[in-house]
Image (cartoon, helix red, strand yellow):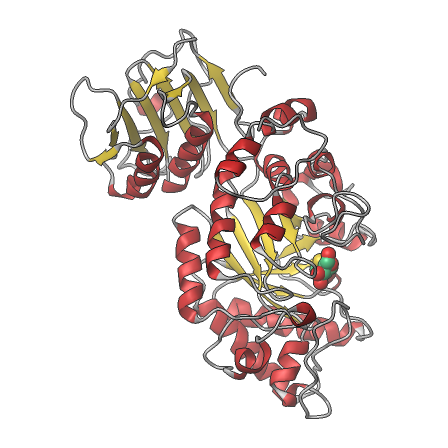
Length: 509
Ligand code: TNX
């Protein structure tokens, strides 16, 4: 293999010499800015160092600098006109060493005297630490080293997500923490939680206590259930935020609502609660626009979840409602979207909402590759933003191959290369490239009962989707990726994670 294996592949990674930087025990991790503290702590844990506010002169150290937004006068500019001091010992004539544009950009310079890390935001510093974790070689017994490199990096897309269905099978908080850490390892920045479905309602909302009281006790097939309290949810939001990840909650309406109809009979035309449903059919349940209770329900639940969510997006679902007249569907989607906007949040919905009138900026999440793409292309041209989750590429609940014990296969079989070898800008012909907001993997849990099941479906495909979302198109190459990803297997083993050893890769284990 040539050079260090960083996934997703950075914008630029330049080997500066053959002399690695050798770590010493207790090495200083210098972070003058308190906002850099979190990244510094993570780095210190990684390298066995100690966080300090100032550097002892001449001692080898990691030096973390927060340069602030490019337009912030408090911080040195990174463009030459801003007069930022030059980094030491850059290759002569190096012109591409500047910090790239964007809040998440970072620059990492490993040289004889230590490691300099620059970014504009804590999230950028966090990405640099993640890259350092992958560059670090050697065991804790022997000397640990970092190759002398210059990494200059920034993401292609601002939305790099993972959607997790915690409704079909409940995912415990501790297990979600593991998944969040995995996301950070792949520089993903959006955790989309599919919190409600026919089978269960997994988040306690103050205005509607019966939702979790009556509809969260089980999972598909009668497996154990559960729900998140307000405190649980706050913990998840904080755990994610500490890793630069924002939580986007989804309450799926106006279909996929049997759990709500089971908790509140007034939401059904009969006035009676529906039966609990623990199968895996879709499309059969629905809200009813003409019922007086429906509007109040939508306003209550979206107001509550928005109030618990510091991030700026709330997902209203909108998928797979069978047998509802288009007008009624549009009215219900419109009510949910209005409730989200009234709470000061931006609206995300599955691709079906593109058939309704949308406010500009609404995020439309593409998923079903069998559908006619015309409405999504039209929505994008009219000001909607497209989030790409094509089922045959990014649905990580699809089986790897026929007969694979876990997962479904309605969108096909998705091997590692399928998740890797596709191009977001040309996926939907006719869609303006600027309309693509980002890429999101999704894992539905009809057949996934444990954390091991979940990570076996995520790994290694999550690494592939993450690189599609992060790396510039001219930096992406399957042969190159399969060589780099081979090194990650040993890390997953060391972390005790279950994963699928795809035969498409010569794993180093
Ligand atoms: C489609 S993706 C669904 C989910 C299922 C999933 C299984 C989407 C918006 N709806 O309800 O869980 O397929 O792969």
